[in-house]
Length: 319
Image (cartoon, rainbow, N blue to C red; front, side):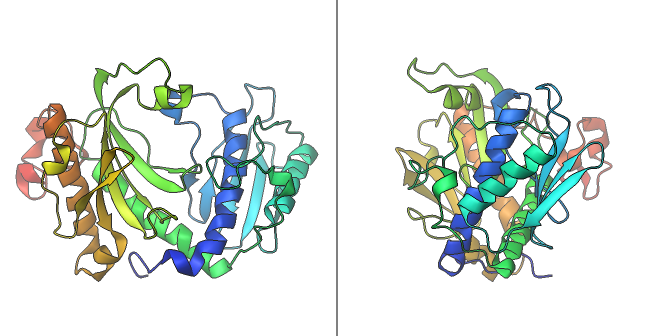
């Protein structure tokens, strides 16, 4: 199977817009039915061998344990309860409104009681329109949906490999339904004092210094898929740091800087996996150097934390 298949935004924009809203509906159910984790780690979706999942949730809120899975092989949404009961329906041919009704009706049949606090899109152009009224977004091309999941899975594999090289606090590799990207974050132990007017979501997400790494599919403001990294809070002179490979560069966005590596440049190279790993590592070292992180002390070559074992790793201490 081709590593990083082509996924130009213009080719699947309509399907992406529908899927994004489907994912937000399921993600908001996850938000309502799960125990809050630090930095909102309970909220994103995760990859499976056939699609994405909420992972098990419920119980503490009085609901049975249940999970919701997108199956992008059979193109179904599957809701499963711990006692073995299950409900499913096809993704093809659904509008956002019909998908929303089918999800809520299926939960009701399974005895799961969940109410979405804000049953409309988050940070999308139609954020004022309830999901139940959206009959506009109906596009769902099975081939494009399957390719979206394959790209996510391949990026997740590279991010997992990169995550192994740091021994400090890290997030899972997870798929954010609000921005429709996949990301992994490294944390320092230093707290971040934030202004009083910062919203609660941002305050919790960025309560520590972070360097984040990920991939997005593109949107109206940046219409091309790309790998990215950012450091928050951004240290002085970050954008002056070198990045690898040559195609990587800094982009100013919203008053701060993103390290960006275009997806199509990676695809054209002879070793896409190594190029992405080199990019993430260079972006990490850029942010860590400028922010004063202890780079060598937090190193974890080959996923090993004991320095005495590093010399026994393939390739020696450098991995």
